[in-house]
Image (cartoon, rainbow over all chains, first blue to last red; front, side):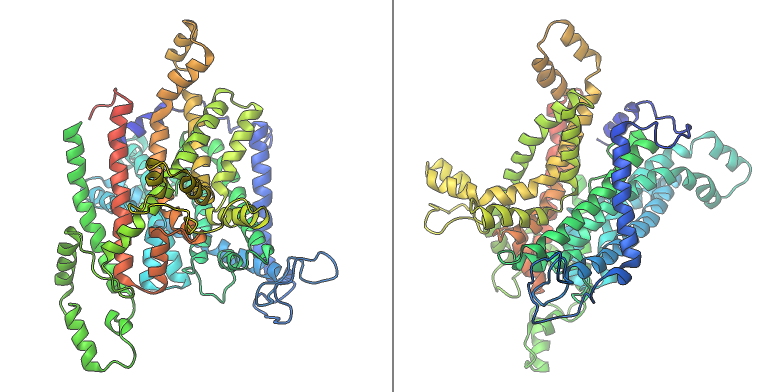
Length: 306
Length: 333
């Protein structure tokens, strides 16, 4: 099966778009341009909200006003635009603070899994032999768990907390990088420029660092974008199940868990945090789609699975 | 093909060993002594020691692992800490509900996504394609538990069309011996019970399948798009096969391999998605059992379920591998 997918991956290489032209995004198909604009817009808002969050949040996200519980959203005449929750906490402020947590966790997960996966993949593909065998066995074992199940198991046994959450999310997410990068490294190591560098006396680590890894940057960026989207959903899922960050930190997932309990009386508790997750993931996926088509059309199937 | 499958089957043995080892080590990395956790605070020191002996917790780690493994092979997954029942029995009761839900979601996903994908792929960049592609992207970006909550809010809360949680209305469901409500009642011709089961299943199955619809649609589209320009398609057209015939017989059957691969990959996502969706809809399957186990720190139950899910996932991948050979006779092992 391995050879089958590799074969079909190489045979499907439609003409790469000419990235050499420098007239903005005009060379992209109109649909692709929409993707870049919409995705970019959503991600930009998110990043800005994440950074300046405490300045624009109207309330303290954890301040309880027990006389103002479950207030419906009010656009005028109230400072609770998106209503309040069962403890009288301001929904909008919690969403704004939640954006920070989601983004930070997802970013940490993507960066760490990227480092681990790319390194292991490059080492595995470049050296081959026993090292490759050991790393691929590890990949096989980790991959045998349905996604998220391993994360649930890790959090169930090791307990909640930010560190454990990131560990649980990284546990499987590095594999995607590792597989793709290994394949690339396998073909790169036989290329003339690598042989030439070796003939000049470069050490293995120098070759990997200076010549193999830079060639893997584009692919890793595309995988990273999709990994970011999936990490946000996974983090929200785990928080929803009560396994994510401690309850005193507001996140979109925990807000949804509360929202589910009050679903029959307070629709706004479940609607707004969910919309945030949806649009965030949509924006990142749109950017990822566009990025993939721009950088490497052969990667059609690399992303989006976990 | 048979020798290949036997080889694959044997190849999964070391993987399973490593998986059990990993899960076992995770359990022992858990903070706190299981015996202390299980017994009440009032238990005397001597009783705790006695309990540790009884559960074999005082033995070296490798012996504990060996005992766990030997028991697991015979289907004995230990006893639940909290429910005091054998884990394998608890799982057996919940398993049919999860299988039924997952199967139904796959059916929904396949019947919606493949026609949509073929249609979009046959007319690239048309309005159908753009609409389908956006729909696919929506499906991928939608967290399934939120979709579930929104469905409850709309269809159960506002319009009262579908029930919001559970699996059957008390009194309507007929025989429930096997646990497969739908299949069992359909075979017995008990249609009110079938309708009841379908009503309960509709929302969770759709929420669970939405993600797969999106991904499957995208893959079908790109796979069809590629096959569309192959020579045998041109030949089929040239010899006068109607466009519908070309699409469904010549294009789709050749585009199936990547589609099957993705269905296989996505089944893992579906399995883990079911854990959350079952929690949202209070669906009495393995997923909600797992979350109950996690919240009450019922370690044997968690371990048993994790192993069960993993075995299911590995088996599914094996079956998918075998399917390749049936669908594409060119593939020889």
